[in-house]
Length: 361
Image 1 (cartoon, helix red, strand yellow):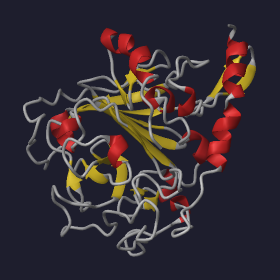
Image 2 (cartoon, one colour; image 1 turned 135 degrees about the horizontal axis):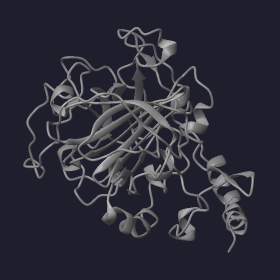
Image 3 (tube, one colour; image 1 turned 30 degrees about the vertical axis):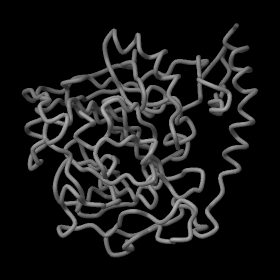
Image 4 (cartoon, helix red, strand yellow; image 1 turned 90 degrees about the vertical axis):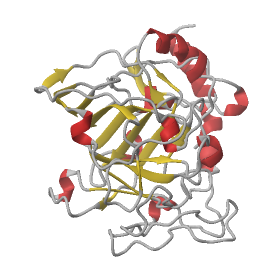
């Protein structure tokens, strides 16, 4: 089947996907979508963004006012941050040995450093991180011992985002802030609310993308409708295990958009009811990046608690800080589940795992 025929076949089921998106409806008990709830940090944040006990999925399990009194490894803070490679948070379950699919509405913020009133990602959990800063978004991709943030070791995970079928977000009431965008004026003490973001967790890795509130094409670049395709298509990257680096980069082509025979096409993933995704009509590749600077993990992640639980003996990678380098657009590490992996074994597992796992949104 030619690429154009293949794309036509997938576009034939796109109408079903679009209908599903159109049919996403706010919960009658909480009719305002999460993306329309805007709060100045910190004074405007309510105790809970989503508090209505009559809502179909129940009320928000955690809280959004977070400070030194809530900062511990049992925190239920659901206010997250992405600032730099040494200062970002991931969404992960509150209880050990959980799966993302079973807890997507309940995830709490796990951060790399104290000061946000959250749980702290244990030392040795992060095993390689790449941060790319582009004109319109910040993307962080990395490798993680996910058991140290309460994710079952075998879980290939899924996507967290501020949407969901009831538009209440996953997690329910989860807020995202950043001080890293140019529109913030370089003021590290002032945080902007990020409206469009996505975070895949699982498969021993993660990807996280936040779009500049004052940037271009926020909804397209931080698209949330390709939850079954994982990081490979939503956040193509050159992350490497054992490497911690920050790069400048160009914007990626928005997820789902590709060129075939000179024509711009849009792919929509089929609904789960049609079975596993066995092929996609294009391959996503990382956008060009440059000015990459690598760091020692020991210099980035300090003040973290010692690991406990199933992954407590795993070792985090570290190395000396090196000079700036450039990375050009090219082949992306293969990715399984909601996360990035590298190596021959990952390539072999891509077709068997990536298209077999149905991500929840």
